[in-house]
Length: 97
Image (cartoon, rainbow, N blue to C red; front, top):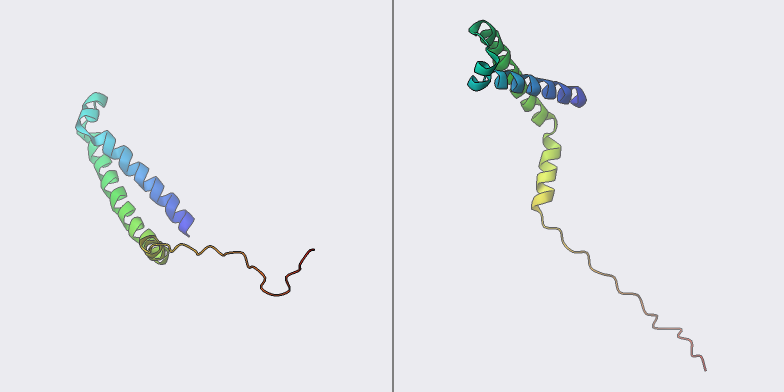
């Protein structure tokens, strides 16, 4: 489910980005686009942006627990682990003479 949502979000983002760039006034003038092309492009741009936004909300909802856990983990300072000293035997010491 999450994979398909991510693929859909990526596609919608690229569609919205592409139509947004094509609708940009200098690009429109450079390409010589007329209002008969820009009007349907505006609809595609608007609806792909709305769909992308809804997918983003769904994406956040599906990943909410992970985001909270990571935020807590990042906000908590990590305590340094104490270094263990090697144990020195106190009994049974052998005397080599």
